[in-house]
Length: 280
Image 1 (cartoon, one colour):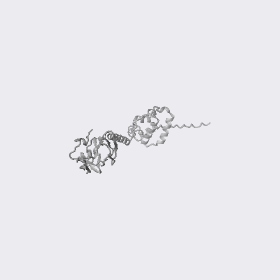
Image 2: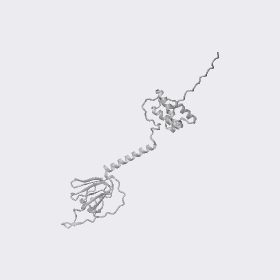
Image 3: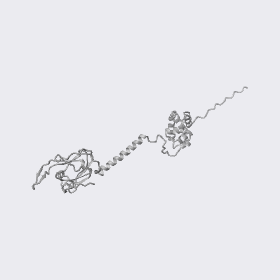
Image 4: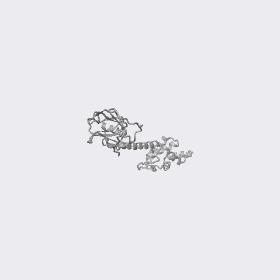
């Protein structure tokens, strides 16, 4: 009876894990693990854990997959096939996973803000601060705005019809129009009569005008931008209340009072008829 020849059983080497394949590819290219960490911004301890298939050292399954994908790209390996194998490994051995809640890791390239995004955030913060400061200056402190960059011009005194009064002194036509026009945006101004009753109050836009009512008793003005208000009497310009960056308050704005301010001998605050110049 002939003996059958013995058939040698084929032995197959165990398949390499994902971590072992990454390690082998890295060594074949002569790359140190520290280089991979520097290029991918993944902590080196996490790369060691991946190569050792010790996924419990990683924050979560998501990190294991994300880090492995980035590692494979640096080594120019086929990502999809490696990730399929990794998912199979993670599914077969749940003990490899870290079940603790995920936390932010500086080395995770998917979660680290880009430099462009960081600059954008800083710029947005600066713009927010500037906008808030400008709003405060305009709304809560209207007199703190900068003086306008305008060329100084010599005041022009309006030629207003002065009807002689009964005592022989010139008088102003009571029907003459006094108009204030804002030359800047957001010019806060308040007009009120002698009793303190408000006639008009607003943040005037550039080009916006207000005409003093002819029947107003002792109209006065309060503003933080006297230099921004152009004044005309019966269509003719007169000097502004002030060319300085200051707050003026309780200044009479009748045609007679404004013309009195324009006289060479009249100076702000020198006579009760010209009103008080209050600087805060």
